[in-house]
Image (cartoon, rainbow, N blue to C red; front, side):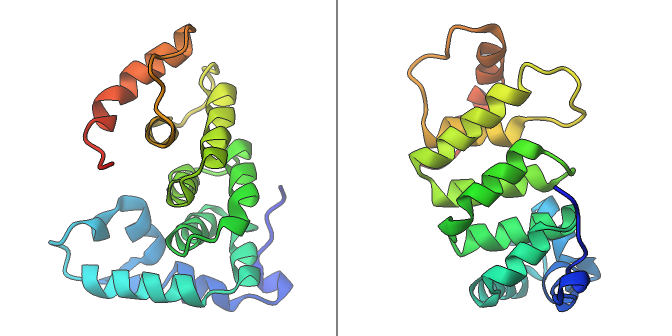
Length: 181
């Protein structure tokens, strides 16, 4: 999918409004990527979370599409906003972006959005992703977020009888026990 700057399609304001807005010198995309706001010890947690909730409700579908069509920072932010507001109409788009795996860092955000939707259809998207990428040895990114999320959405009784899935299952199993149901 070719990348297009939101400014080229009349949505130049979305980068500053949603992606690079700063919190204690850190832009939103870095805070989202690092998960800093999930801990109560960060000074800006309350303000950041309030802004994230408000922006997720306020952003239009067209603005989200503009962000999803650009680079990793914009896609990461858009996926979080989609997940926070549970905009299930973006399921197919998020699934396509996850499967395309074109840019770094966004995969975890796509998984967050799918987790917020939390349906069997989302588990199927993750299964398709894992079926495609787990057997490969060439990706230079790790797979923990999709593995953990797939296990969370639809936990199997036993790992399937094939080597790469068994090893992936074993790798993510300890993390799954600590996730809230």
